[in-house]
Length: 365
Image 1 (tube, rainbow, N blue to C red):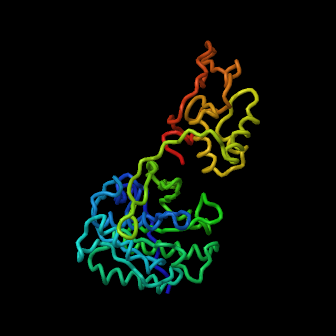
Image 2 (image 1 turned 30 degrees about the vertical axis):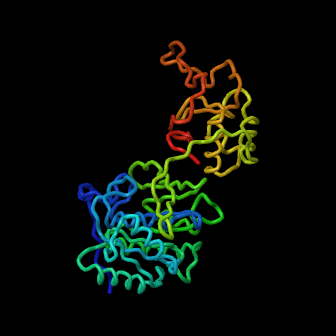
Image 3 (image 1 turned 135 degrees about the vertical axis):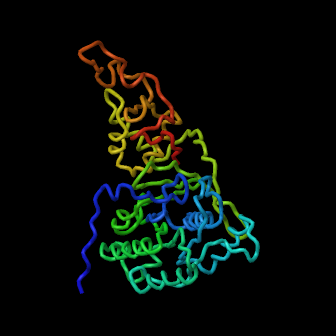
């Protein structure tokens, strides 16, 4: 039997549809969105995701971000079942829940595969059975690999089927669907087919440095990316919970690592007559962007490198006198006299922000 004709909509009809409700203010996490959190194994993804889930279910805010309205959460946990009750006990103790008081998060312990339509149907039927008349605000899949048995993360076909299943969960519940995933050999992105990244409306990355977790929004399909959150794991009972941490200040360093020295030596080699822009320096080093950003900030903070200008116009050079000529030709509007050069002859410290300026308002690690 053929399908009925597809419905077409004029732009003026679609234009006035209500925007999706933001579940957690200032995070980009809305109803009906697909979101992913990825990180290296073992640094705290599940602690972050269970914290988020508990907040959506019963708390007024999550790490300082207001919750729009508390509603049930469905959390599919695919690994670490034997030790998971300790994590639950720590969460409950941190939020002072009574012995028989539910948190509002419903956990799925049974295995299922997003590659099997019947398994997805069984999950949806379980949600309808346990939450009659009330759709969940959030569905968590943690971690993704545990719920695609028999599939290949690197296969476009298999990952496309997984994405179709995530769409189905979203469309039939209107929930935010949140996926935990691991990094691969490249620590700067999640492992597997690019199909998953393309489907996501929001992507967060979690990184650890010196005991501090940096939770950073890497992709936001609509809107302005929020500022990173700096977290730490606080021991509670026999496990941990996440909480906000103060971003550590860079310590003064007197000895550079081999990688840091390479980045500095590269700058010295390419600066001939004038300071160079961020992109030229970064590309010349051949290092990963995250590593380069962290090293750049350290070198500027410790005066191994001088920064001139700000934002898109920022330029970098080793300490020492600048060339006597302006870094860029002076602009003469309408043939008039020269104006002040774009880049002043005094260094500007960290905190000026702007695109291509990694050590701006963020605190890199």
